[in-house]
Image (cartoon, rainbow over all chains, first blue to last red; front, top):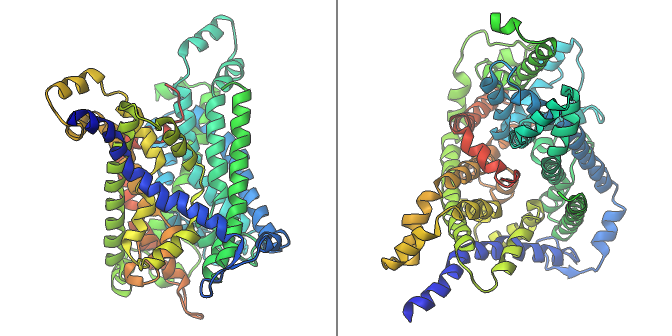
Length: 286
Length: 280
């Protein structure tokens, strides 16, 4: 008798710690954040309900829209530069003709585990106007970090440098999962290397491409560390990301309601992107 | 050499492109380490690739002018305990989902799936309010708690727990072993690869974590490495030169453990990353 009741309770005991953490540190805060979005709360004074005022404020906040533009730019670079580039890299890393494969893999993969702060500080020095290596190599003193348009470049370079290996790991795993027989069959049919790539490799990689794009998109929309260290979001917000703007409003100005409303917009954007992608994935039967 | 000459033209181009690209990937590492050995005067001169001599002054300054050893200890404590707790919590939950049938299982699993959709940055305001109300501002525990039940870890554990043969569990049950004992003595050893993967990933993520510690920690002595390092350059008073040399020494030291761990046990790290991505 004792044993059967024990048995029935066991799984709940086993999952309890995880769900307590979810409740207290994820779902609870998320609901909290949702509610706070509709309040004027500066952290010192008690919160005051102000309806849609925060969201209306955001709608006409030019700095917010600038941060949206910057974030979308970071996402676009990640999707349209990092993803294709890492596919090509994965093909090379998978190729038996590549010399020193293991060394090359280690070189491209190592950036994934580096500290964003350490690496952003390193790039900050590399891009320094007067004593940085980049300008020394180019031979011109370009003010990378101080110019509104050029400051985006170092941020983008760090993103590519740090994320290229991550996405190519996924593609490499995808490539290694392709059934060799498909290539053999294509060879028998007289397909050239190029034809084999387009008729076997690419279609076989579709599920992984979806997966990688989703990870990259969701990750890049939350970018914070790299621009925060490299430029602090400046000059005059030219590189500020949405999460950086949330941080600025929330933790330098302590406008919790406004910051939460920015978070709400970010959440809706990310959720709808992933919903669209899941839909696409379902429709294409992957 | 003979082997090389057998490569086709296309393979030659590929090798050159990949290796030149690899050199660019290495460049920041080389610059970081090289700058960490340069003297202050050398850093503020036109860039050279290598330092004139190996000067350890930046490293000495790092430990004397900033509480760097304290930051290392804080980072280690946070990363180790986060990892340990995450492994315990996720392995228990993953095993329960793989090996038990219970009421609400499907719904609870759906909750788990939906939790992966919540972007962390939207939680920082409430997390800050909660931890400060609990009087946990500047505490290392507040840095661990939000990361001790990674949903992805539960998926990974669930996958490996499902490899545990049911016959093994049944025979242990017949021998009178309790559920907890069966979990620790039979299931957990089979789940070791998943534990290794998740452990490495969690440790590295915690070690590098920036946004949440930046918000939760204000006191210099409670900082973890990334926050302390960021503070080294931003906390400079106007007019004085930023301590780039010590910053590069710090960067070198903070990257060494994670890169070393990665190179040593690449296989587990990659398995952990790709577990959910590739259908077996």
